[in-house]
Length: 250
Length: 130
Image (cartoon, each protein chain N blue to C red):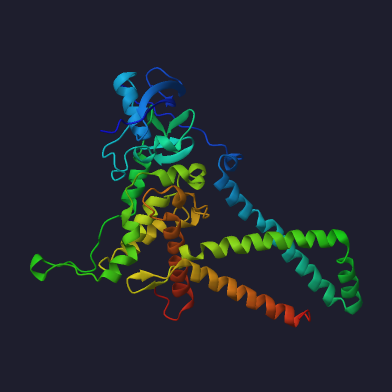
């Protein structure tokens, strides 16, 4: 059996205890890791062997649940997807940027959750059908129109990368608007007007200046920046239809 | 156990120095100053033109100096930077779906460059350069 290669990994972790600290501080750890491990494994090794008081969120360990987002050397990453072999020297781990720190690497996600609720990220059928009337059918082409945007795992890495959200916290932000767009693009959905009231606003897409950082850090290749620009184009067309076409209806 | 979330301050003036991708973004945004300057120059040119052939000719002669040339070259460089940046991201804003597939973004970007080249040739033709 092949022996797994081991190495000592140095971590610099931002710690914050709301009961004791007035502000966060860095704490250094040195922990033995397998070369194949990810940053989340190294943090788990610290918690199990060195410091059980270290707090961080995680669940699936396979880039699906979106719980373990952190700043790794200043870059928003899923810590279960940040392989130690890609890092040299001291690895600096901080809580996701642009969110308040609850404790250590755990952030307060309430703002994102509230915004997500506001955009109604669920199917609002055009017409209600009874079970007897059968399912809402969709062709593969209709599915492909929104499939990419449905891959979002709500990990909030895009919010941590977005300077607009950092400077204007009222901004509804990349993931929530992308999910609104995902349902707006769904042939079975009839809730676009309700969502447009939230996202085609100054707090919505018009706060976005297309930095594109959200798409660069997205671990699921959702391309939120693309979704937001498409919402801008569609909202502009709405305006022209409303104001310039005879009849003036959307 | 009490809750006391800690909010990290974000620098309102130095945030773009924190990552190369933010600097790239700012390099695109700063082009508006140079393009705005060129728009002003065009307005001045029109104003001179309205004052008659001599006024226009002397204005154009003044623009042929080395400093004007340097300024115009700088404006052109920033205009090209602005145009190429936006052309390269057009597939994000206007994806073209054909059946179950999406048209490769390079065709959408390429179409923009092609129209740009044709428009430039038409302008150069009417300017008497070609």
